[in-house]
Length: 144
Image 1: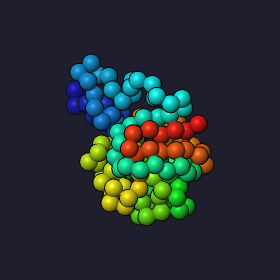
Image 2: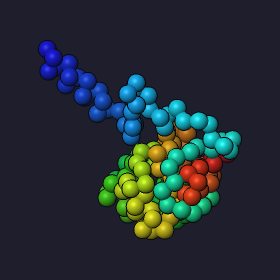
Image 3: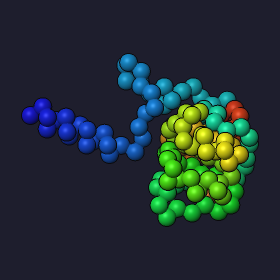
Image 4: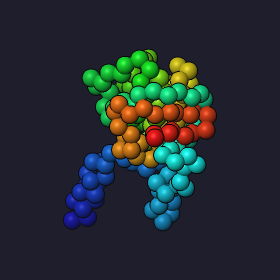
């Protein structure tokens, strides 16, 4: 009985698209309840690769078969080595998960593209084709 309940719980958790990076002891996710952004219409995260870029957003949930036009800003849940080819044409990176030493942040710095990581629900707030400004120095993503 206990084993089957735990298997059901584990299966439910694996179906989640967003996995919190940090949970406080009361179950709160600090990034989800962060204070409002200093600029209206802005999302905030952790600065990961310095620089600023304005361009068209491309939300990608899976790198398989994904295509970015040169200069588009990649918006994704997280990255691993399978995402690296997309960095070749990306003008910037916004990730929902990760920190300054995550895969996406390190590769963005290597390729010299601005990046902000740990942006809660970025793939929900930003839509493909939307013009955004990404500031990898301050950790702000302006969507308005």
